[in-house]
Length: 191
Ligand code: NI
Image 1 (cartoon, protein in one colour):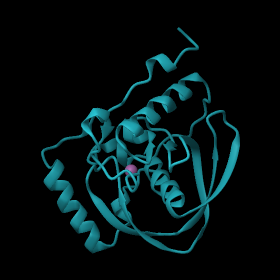
Image 2 (cartoon, rainbow, N blue to C red):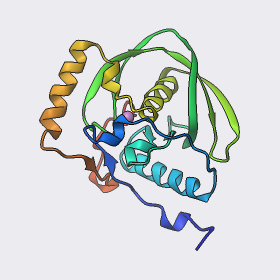
Image 3 (cartoon, rainbow, N blue to C red):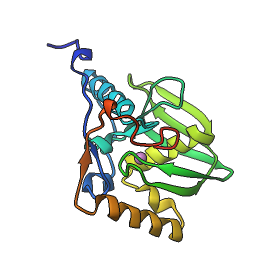
Image 4 (cartoon, helix red, strand yellow):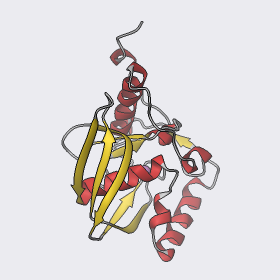
């Protein structure tokens, strides 16, 4: 039944670090048709169900360079992000929906320019700072197979890996967000 995708919006399982899909570089988005719109709808639904502020396609097992986010002004989608013009530094505690419940202090540039395409394929450019700048960097890393704790210093990385093994050392590779569970993560920092 082409044309009516809203009726099939679904919460998708989120891959947990250890799943190899999170270590691969995504393919560029080239098809800006209804399949992409449907994927974006599902990703937004999944991000809200999980109480995250951002979610990248590889986190739901789709190896494409796109992500969705909401920093308090409604859902947005970014396809084929390219970051440039980094400025400043900002140390901030980050979490990730692919490592639910683990938070790591990470220093990153405070400001960044993101060039990308919207869901219809139009070229866009946004200059971002603070949380939005952080979201752009964290989610673009997901699109490139980079794990956020790769960005942490040695001490914080070791601590995060220890927590990771405690929580998911049993080989768990995905979790299904359930909005009725209550909040599993800290929404303001989980990207
Ligand atoms: Ni993440």
